[in-house]
Length: 398
Image (cartoon, rainbow, N blue to C red):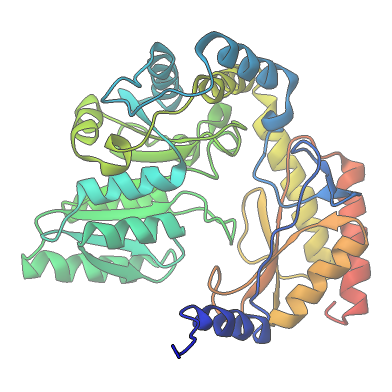
């Protein structure tokens, strides 16, 4: 008789290990539009973990634009941009994004993740060296791996350590190109990269800088143009990455820079070349959100005001919010099991806030990651602080 075997038995074993370490994850179902309050599996809760920072994902004008775009152009684009999927609406949005970011050109990708994969792996290869902040997003890390370049990771925002690595790489003479890549706003700590100093180091060591502004676009800088614009560095940061899926409430990523950069990526970036183009409804919704943002410069200021209020409140309660300077505000708990308990207690109090655990953050730094929106009211934030106070006291961590 044939011997029965389960070739995927290791999957069950791995899942049990994750459960034992309090690292198991499962999907929860949201049953309403993405907004400051959502219905989660039958219950209305305050949404304190969304990247929909300006409330654009559920804005009536943005929704109507998606409907109109779909009605006129259809649901899908049918092909990649280089085959027959390049439509006039793509070019319209790219021109608008380039003007918004103060660059010559922009290029759309299907997501921010594929933008980082495609840009980094196109710009760097086995003869090159990439200098990457240790807290960079997973998409940056994966782009670095895919590039096959030599990757030197430096401690978070540690300029001295970065300079030492740049100096050594320059002396060795082994790197054809040297690329420094950082998040503009770090997605788990909520702090900002020291861009002026990074620009100086890049110039000193004949390197070039790439900044991912996914969590900065729409909320920082003049008119929400991002952290590069916050420091007035639009003309000296050669490669910018951002997303349509956060402040602009849609889907997709984009790169900004020179026309030459865009032409190079069109010809070399695999995640652009071999991906079906974004559909009209998605592009139209992003355009509508950009219209709203440019028409109301108070929206980014509202996000920052809400962030200060919640951050100050959490600090007063005794929570460690690290060096958060933005709408992303961590409340560090430390222990994995305790962090999960905290998240459950918050949900019982009516607040949806994510428990962030390894491998997203390092061991011992587990946290509740909160994110505020322009649509949160002062009453909403007071409600959240009350929940944090109750849960923290029940767990004896404040």
